[in-house]
Image 1 (cartoon, rainbow, N blue to C red):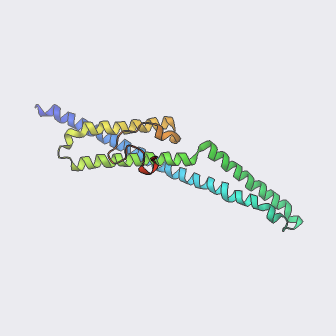
Image 2: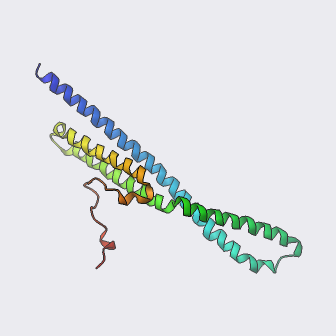
Image 3: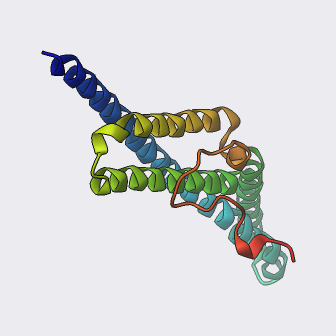
Length: 179
């Protein structure tokens, strides 16, 4: 009968581990979706700013070559395209899709490496049952970090202290270091 409380404690730890692991996977799926949305938004804003902005600046060259009857349509078209360019600039300034994309990539990479670390520990460790509380604590720190990032915003993701993940570098990249 002495093994019964120990077995119940092990089952509770395993259930808590599964809950935390599923929660980290859910956060990963959410931020992968955020990454896709931010990438699309950034591309659309870039097209609106540069391609349509180029069309607006090229209109004076076409103005002399059009018939007078087409000039009003041309000015209407220029006005609409110009409005799209201004809207794209406002969206880029207000929502910062490029910074949100980089933040989402940072979170996705961290969560993927954290999941990989836990899965490798589970597969390679001979005494996995003893390490479950440590893994639950690690997963809880990852979830807490994601919650802090939600508060700080994706543009400030690098300012929030990230938990140590084995498969991620701790310091800045070698290419970004100053000699």
